[in-house]
Length: 426
Image (cartoon, rainbow, N blue to C red; front, side, top):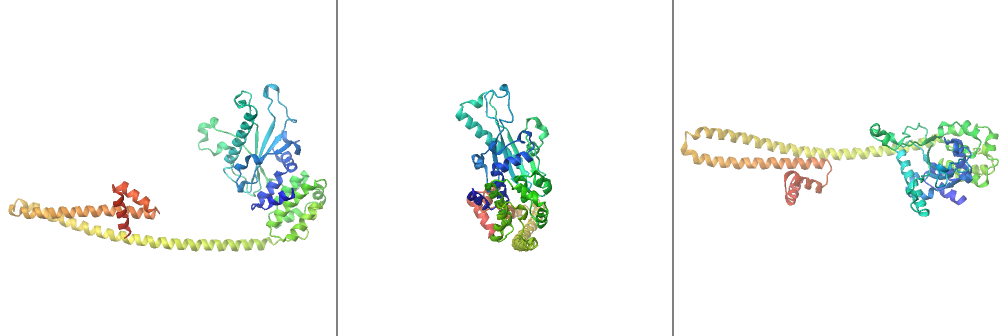
């Protein structure tokens, strides 16, 4: 078991490692359910009533959620059903699903729902394998699942505890939506004194997990020595090892030297919990200063990189604006020429009736003007295409996306679209 616990401590998420140690043990888990679960049927639960079935649902666990625990709790000897309530004589147990959180996660109700569905589907498959078609029978029932969120964060838990509260306009279909709640057990809702008065190992483990600052450490050392030592008086040796591993996880997170960590952990195995922090010192202020300096450096690097990107984007924007101004100037020149041509045409039309002899010359000028107009229209289309390309470049679209858009917007062939794209970038 020692090797297994050491493997857990090497998990990069130290708080999750501590949670895995706590809830992975049936003694600690039974104490947790008896002391803190909001369910009377669990008040007398013993370690032998609990079976860890987390491995059955490992496909749902990610590294970040490796501390989630699924326990099968046999309540048959504490609660009985009438014959008509359980006609198939199904085993009576509760599946306890314990999620460990260090910060508020607003989608936890959906995470829990996925677990519950997976648990029920797994149960159905197992029952069908033993008793074919049993799930289609009237008396078939799924086991109850009791979801618990064990929350170690200092902030108030503000996520909704009812899944329906995560559904938009829930009042429209209220009765037809899935409703279930989970219990939040918030570590910081309990004082050290309240935890100490429980007098069991799980409450001691929770006190350990509350230590995050010099003030927390000092508050722990002020607790009555005899009460702390009494908790470990009859603790099994293997469980002392788990408690020692919890403290190792805490002290290693403080970057203490190995000899100090092991010396402190040995006091737990000697059942001298009150003397645990003797000789343990940790400069939280220095660590905080080091972290703030590192944070400031990272922020400065990010700011410099952002400024570099902004400067590059500004330069590109200025270049595009210059090209746009050039196109606008050319368009203005074309518009001026068009106005001039229009004036000439009006003058020619006025003289047409008077000078029939000049009609051929006027017709020639008209053809010339038509050619100029066609040139203007072509230039206008090119301008629209250029603007369209510039807009999509600013939107960081790829060449393929821009060419595809040109074909759709301006009815161009693939070759024409590629030529227009290259002309715009020339």
